[in-house]
Image (cartoon, rainbow, N blue to C red; front, top):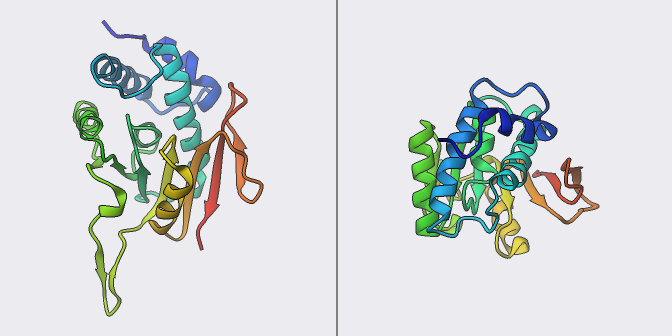
Amino acid sequence: MRTLSEERIAKLIEPYVGPDAPEGLYGQLSAYLDLLMKWNARTNLTSIRQPEEIVRRHFGESLFAGIQLKPRVEEGATLLDFGSGAGFPGIPIQLLLPTVRVTLAESQGKKASFLREVVRTLGLATEVWAGRVEEMPEISGVNAGAQARQFDVVTLRAVDNMKLAMVEARRRVKVGGWLVALTTELGDDLESIRIPADGLGWVRFERVG
């Protein structure tokens, strides 16, 4: 038996995504929630324990970021979820934007194992990088030596030491790409969009040039 029905999940996340969600999204979120509740009973993936609050705070906020990101990226764009934890916002964005090539970076072994299980169960093509972003292999450019692997979009949410993480995250964004942070802090110098429902969080967009 599912933790929450697809109908209940749909009602909870409608304020974040509106009425027109992709076909199959609620079933995938329901399966994701089941795995999260099962693993969270023995591994501290999230301090939020109530299923409906997980759907609102983790699923809803991540999907809202994906909705805002959608018109800014093309099909086949690459996205790095920096310090993915239990997969937020990377996995919900992958479900919402299936043509985006998402990489989930998580250095804690148990969390990385959980991410692999979610990817396998949901049948996603998502990559899991089980290590620190700083340790991602360098790539070699023609006559340019080695350079950092870069992405069209880098997302961050609830990472340790956000200011330090932002420095490394920005280095991983291609020129003209987007750095996207889900945060409770309003940055006056960045484009900030209030997350609906809770009235506290923001999605902040920075164009890296």
